[in-house]
Picture 1: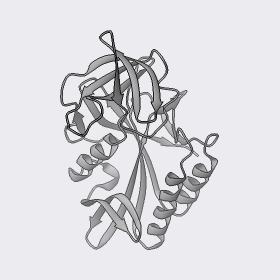
Picture 2 (picture 1 turned 90 degrees about the vertical axis):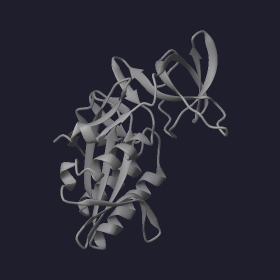
Picture 3 (picture 1 turned 90 degrees about the horizontal axis):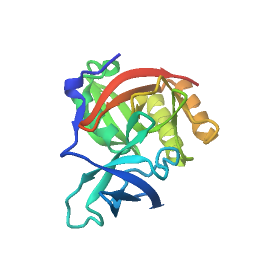
Picture 4 (picture 1 turned 180 degrees about the horizontal axis):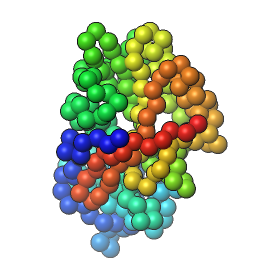
Amino acid sequence: MCASESNTAILFPSTLTPATFLHKPNRFVAVVEMAGETVTAHVPTSSRMRELLTPGAAVWLAPMAGARRKTAWSLVLARDGETLVSVDALAPNRLLARALAAGAVPEFAGWALARREAFFGRSRFDFLLARGERRGWVEAKSVTLVEDGTALFPDAPTARGARHLEELIAARRDGCRAAALFIIQRADAARFAPHRALDPAFAAALARARAAGVEVYAYRCAVTQDGITLGDRVTVTA
């Protein structure tokens, strides 16, 4: 299955500037070499990306305006071998919002995007969908790690991720439709699986969710220096 590209593309606001990754003093800041100068850039994700952001890795920066910003740059792309990878954790939500609003995700054909960041009880999900009187809750996760063609999530233990799955189970038991969508921000994944070796608790929560009727889908993306497009659905394995 493939979403309509015309409705699911995010273009970068301007030409990206190439740089070389040096190191990360913390999860949200990268030190890079750009045009012979050492500069800092914001990393728009809390993921560790240790396999991706290694010293000497090719990365691309986007200029970012704003009086409150500590750096004028944001690190938005990295190269893993010959594959470009989007590292912006907010991009999946933006891609899905466009696709869902346009009715371009086949699994949710006929469902309208009612609200973003909607609350179910005390829980907040990324999207609330509606079809007549029915309600559907959707949580999106950003995936950047691929090993031997398998996209893996998470790349660091995440109690929050497991909690989201338990909340989706609660929504399903309440009679609502519930789904977790893993958006793989690169094109070289043939399948998706939970990163069981790194976070067995999350893998177990995902298995419970699927058994409870929570739908689990994974989509890979086409990534270029111009932008990101939601692409084909890939198989979810245990």
